[in-house]
Length: 337
Ligand code: AQP
Image (cartoon, rainbow, N blue to C red; front, side, top):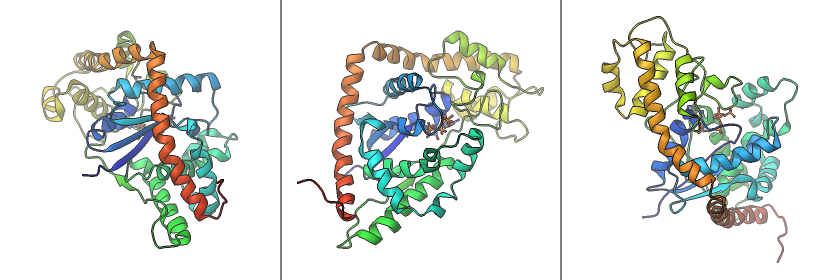
């Protein structure tokens, strides 16, 4: 049976945290078992906001190593760095010329992210969804795992592929570009900030205490959990909108301990925060330990990491160049013989 192709990625905008792992990378690890999985570190997206070049290079490498440490298997998946495949930027330009401005003006994430940047909003940030469309369309992805915040961007990629490319430029009725579908995952884990229960955990939150990163030491994890925002109610519960912190920390505990929601819901129903927090800290430290061990091995064996990324790059390059050439031809751009 032909396996469906999936594409996804994370921006190296900071240290990978529990939200990135539980909401994204963990799902890829399952998907790679019966899908053809392409995952990249989307460093070109990371430069759409102000960045430190040294930090970006380091975060890019760390993110790739963490994909593998979390269980992405180079023998099953293609793992690569976005900017090393020039076709992403080239396709982005072609798509820019085909995408109506008013489609872009509707993008909610741009409106939200641009507010954060004040006067420093780049054209790249505005163009982010087109670059994301290029990422997806280059690899003929059948499916793209998307959370609520990325649904609109995937819709844009589908509209560009269908309405602006296939229906306008196909000379024989055959699609030039595959139109991807969203992959809505069963149990989408949205992890919230440790310091504000209604805000998602985020790499770029200026408050380090708002997130637990996958490389935090046991001491730091314990300290961050100890400081995490709580309320004055005794007993923890899921789904009480007035208690977002309780819901978030209990959800984290149910996933990280492996006990599941039903068990922890019962076990913690009458527990005070002082008893609960050390349990959560212990579960977090244990869950991250194997990842940290594998990460340390890999990051200290640069030869192996480079080899994996080079192989991923070669696989990705082959597919990406074919798609790019198809569209270049369809648009009337003369190709080299
Ligand atoms: N808090 C979260 N809970 C669940 N999933 C999350 N993801 C991010 N935060 C959470 C998922 O991780 C992937 C990474 O996406 P991204 O790097 O492209 O950007 P993002 O969603 O904007 O992630 P961050 O960590 O919040 O980064 P910054 O601060 O740079 O914007 C996506 O699949 C996302 O759903």
